[in-house]
Structure formats: C-alpha cells, structure tokens
Length: 236
Image (tube, rainbow, N blue to C red; front, side, top):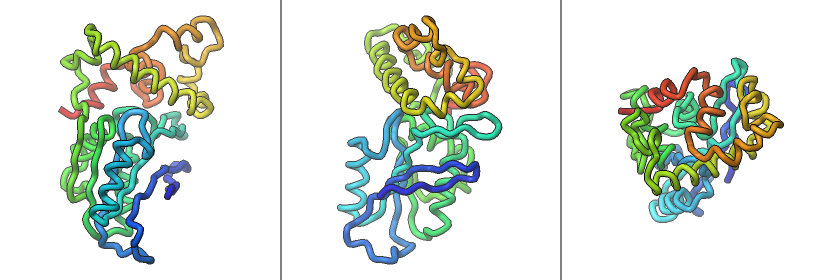
C-alpha cells in the first residue's frame, strides 16, 4: 500500500506499507513497526527492501514501512529536499514524528547503505530524543573525509566500477527528476542542464559519484564546496 504524507513545505513523502494479511481493522496502535530506509537510488521495490519487509510482516506479524526519498522537491529558499544525498535535511525526523503521533508500541529502524548513513546522522543529532526504540545500519558509509579512498582517490578497478555503476543510477535519477531539478536556479545552470556540446559530453565523460555531487547535490543542498558537504555527511 502506497501512501503520500504531506510535508510542512507543501510537498509529500512517499512511503509503502507492508502489513500482515490478518491485520485487524482498525489497526491496534501497539503492533511493532519497523521503518526501512533504502540505499542510493533505491526504492521500496528493491529486492533487499521487499525481502526484509516481508519477513517483518509475514514471519513476525509486525508492520514495515519503507520510505521512498528518491523524489526531490525545491523549497522556497531554493534548497533541495529529499533525493539521493547522504545528508538528511529533516525528512527522517518528520517521518518518524509523524508515525509516533499514532503509534505507541515498539518502533525500530533499518537503514541500508545511504539510508543507513542518513539514519546514523539522525541518531547522532537527536540522541535520546530520537523517538525510536532500536536501530540498525547495514553497509552504511560513515566517513566521507579524504580518508575514504573510494570517494577521493578511486584508482583501483573495483573503485572505478563502483563509481561508474552508482553514477549511472544517479544519472537515471536525474532524468526522472529533471523537471523538478530544473526549477532550482543554481542546478539549472549546471553543465548537465546546458543544451551545449559540453553539457552533452558531461553525461558521457563524468562517471564518478563526485561528479553528480558537484553538479547537483552540493549546490542543491546549499553547500559551497564538496569538502563542506562530505564533512557534514560524515558520521565519524
């Protein structure tokens, strides 16, 4: 079941509910809930999300809710909300608070990869006021400082394939969100959106995650440079 939760900025968060088939109606407020945050360019329909959610719903008899944050929106102050960045700008806090308004039982969270990084940042900021009872981050990148050679110095073949694969998925995400991204004044002037030869070549020759960050995420989130963004995205 897909639900769109209105946000204070006039947008919405898309979530998918996974529930036991014998769930009572109305739903008791004390049935345990596990929130799931997917990885970079993922969604609630990714295999690892569905398998985890179905295990929670079918085998445990609990409820699982997966947050789809791949859709972006431009706020009044020309900042991007949502999307595939490693820095959470408040969507997790709003989402968890929204669930807590009607749920009094156990509330846990699982974050995969980028979702795990967002979850760890959220826990670091909120501490004992996080409103959740348990959390688990799986394969979450926590350090984006120069110590992270995969990001800063991808010299090995494995590192290069990683960048090519992730950047390809991010470019597909950019295409799906093209109309919204184009509304941002800084992003609309970036190379990927220029109808020039250099703009066209960007899509072919820029095959690192950092290329997408420099063109979209850093100006969209209000950062002045890559180091500033990566320092904020780091949890250690």
